[in-house]
Image (cartoon, rainbow, N blue to C red; front, side, top):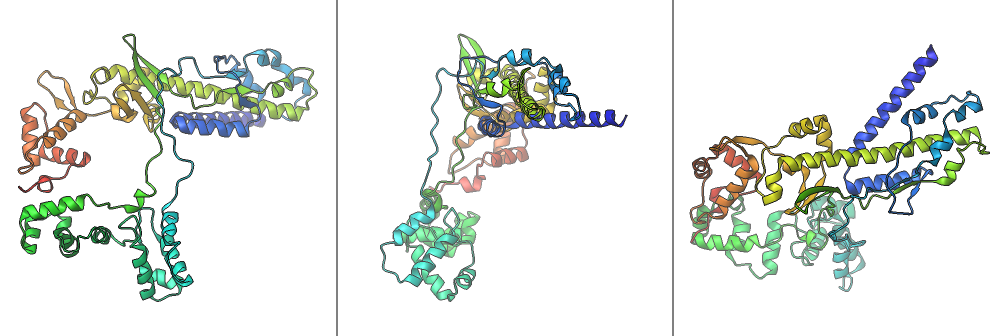
Length: 474
């Protein structure tokens, strides 16, 4: 009785583990899946890279036999090992390759990330290599360079720098002044105001209105109080506006001009194309290695093999793991395809006409269509991208709330309202920019149900400045 309980417990634990792993596999994107598969290739000797790309998936291994074969007790007679018909099991196809519908034609080429790129420290140290400093100065300058953040700022207090380097603060200030003369201009600054003032100084604008704004009226500058700045500096508002244009072209993060803080290249997980009048969804898994089960290890499982019981048990466990991985990858493909087709059906106008023609769509809507739980849909759409005729979009992009209805009774999506809001701001008179209230009134007049607070929220999401900060003086 205890034995039965233990076996049941082990089975439940195994199924639970595989379920967790399946969910994890469903959640990863194409690049992460590639890394996961390559890692499994290293850990599981039964798996190998397939030699041919022309084979199709043939996975007819009976799951009940696989489960039974992995649960044999150590004290079970050797003859019981072969209750599973391993001859038939191993004569099945031993290869896993991508389906023939994998996207191949008309592929885009993605910009490769450089294998090596000179960092900010190296770039700055090269500039002081041929300068005449004594050894102590060189070491202090290099130490300060090493303290800089990737964006070029020194955020560590200078007193701490001096204390750690066993020098006085004046020496540390002298070394920092040298660093601030290096390229790119603005590097070595301790805050944004110092960064901008260094750049203005290097440009020969020490006596400019822009420099006065940065050094004398920083608090008003942060609040964009243009009339107040003009009054305190004794200049016209248009002069302040011109100075702000100069400041706007400065680099607030000079370090990134040497070592850009750019995200990894986006590899779309799905490709949506219209072929001969029909919309097709294809999985872009060309980067995922095709899997092949080693025939050498497979031969050890056949009757008559001289492999020991322990060896067969080990190979059986690895074989089961390989089989599960193959099935999980195929299940991932199937689920992602179903979700994308459901999105395509709900957002047909968008795919035909492009942005901003998104219809209101919720995760639950897709879950109801394909008969899956909403959490599964969330995992599929999180961090995944689809390449469409109108660009590459994250799957989450296609889900948008409804905000009221138009005159015909059709739901209006928030993305459509945001798009119209951006159009209104782009076309406004810069000398008399539209307030949130005026934008709300215009939208209501066009049939959009939108309050002023809603406009303010969407404007902030679109990173559009308030009206007073968009004002341009003539």
